Image (cartoon, rainbow over all chains, first blue to last red; front, side):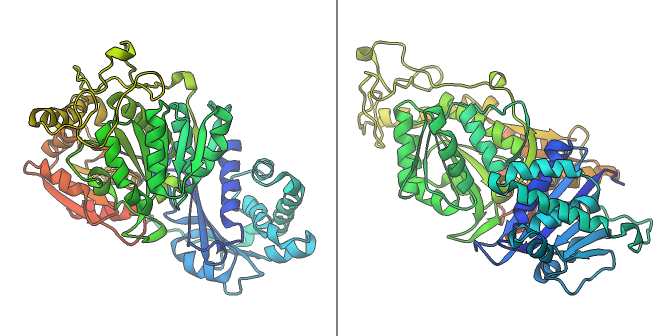
Length: 197
Length: 378
């Protein structure tokens, strides 16, 4: 058995939703400010906007060999097509975080469905920060990266005049996630056989 | 050098190539942007002006390759970066750099081909093109990168080899390595070994530009430094002028090869992991060596004596290291994101070992599970 602390995440959405930026910010928070080894990868189509967009993050206390996701511990889906397309590597014990604004069919009960885009639009007055709202929630759900680290990474990666808005977005997402009772999610029924590769 | 060296940073493979090039002393970049290599040009355009270097976006890759040859002849270490379609356009000028012995580094971030192919998906289809893409019998050095740290170190190495042997060095990356961000701490500039070409030690009137010596690498004078000399893609004599005399042609071609053969020991770079007692091995390069490493670790955790030989130098083919693996192991797997290019080089070394191919050409990364399952079935 290979025992290691490999925590794997995938963010999926459509081109233009800031999926890759959100992943880069998370990777920086985990890698620079929390001291993890990090691999962040992405795949996208040739289109500048539209089309599917996917970003992955693997974090570990050890050096990372294979840089991509093998089984997702956390999956952030920002719309239904991305959820449907990228759900395939979901670990039975994983957690799905989805944007209720654009997702209406959820394939697992281990899910936290919050209206990230609606929050961005109505509470922050700018739909473009939906990715950062979601990132705030992801930070709370995964429990690997502190809000302070995410704040620093946001400040480093977004243009200065939008820092304040993005920090507020981060807090709004974290707050929305904290209001949910994560311990109430149905537990995964463990077995002896472990999926390894 | 970046003021951030010594600090922990989150860098993309492409960015690490830029940092490696700058650390090695590269001060000239010419090229034309193309996915998945564009970030190299983008970062160079930001970094070079601040270092008194020059960045030029050319009209196409043909001109990009031409410009870096010119800059190198003028004494400046030069880089261009592209992907398959651009690399095809560079082949003619790449041959000129081989013939005129112009040190330079060409990064090819591989994507799926042929032709425009899949512009955003990884592949390893340009291995043989890197070796034989330009016409004529010519030596060339081809290195392959697999991690962000590799991108830095191997690019430094590429410049060092180019300068030391007066030869174009091709760095093969791929879409995965190029766009993977990892946390890295780049070394302090003082800890990086940098090699520069040897300048003539004689006065200009005594300079014989292509005069042989024990290394087979002639001293190189920068254009404009007072050492007047002729540079041509035609086969030339020691003074740089065209010749058709059989003994001069023969000496020229043989010297081109001899200078590389002389350096095999330092040029052929490989990395062995868990090979000491291995009975079964994977030979891999580029991003696939990361999948292979995981597969080997998994096999070990199940009591299978597996090992990995990662090829960093693809050409000149590291025959010695491969021979060792083939002597030791009863079976060897060669996973590649092409229909089988390096496997044929491995087979050419062959003793009696069974060599098995594993190919993927759908624009998707080979997974550790695939390699592991294949190892198990061998």
